[in-house]
Length: 136
Picture 1 (cartoon, rainbow, N blue to C red):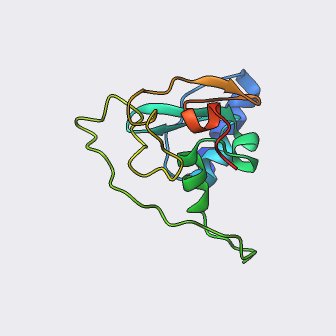
Picture 2: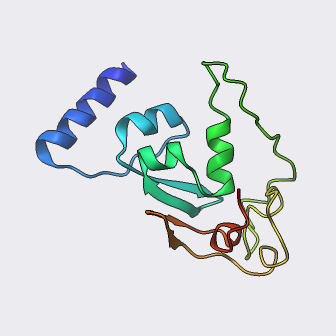
């Protein structure tokens, strides 16, 4: 049933030139249905990019984390880092970078200033570490 609905949505997109928001935690479905994707963390967009580009080269640490949760069916042996830290309260998120308690790249700026979406290689990313070139 899900596949039939997704196929109908894609067909309508192509035939009528439709654009619509599609919200999901299922990254395989997002990849199938979307041409652009916005990754959100605690209600704020942290990365906005073409879907294929985001899957190939995620920039924000949370987008990387999400993509690392997809099972590695090819069993490529790629390294995956466990996620540390606590998730802040979604009722009262911090006024700074909400991902900083879990981010391995967080520094003092992340704990004192909220990052804004900025262009980065065809995407838009809200991350001080990305902006400053501190990510591998």
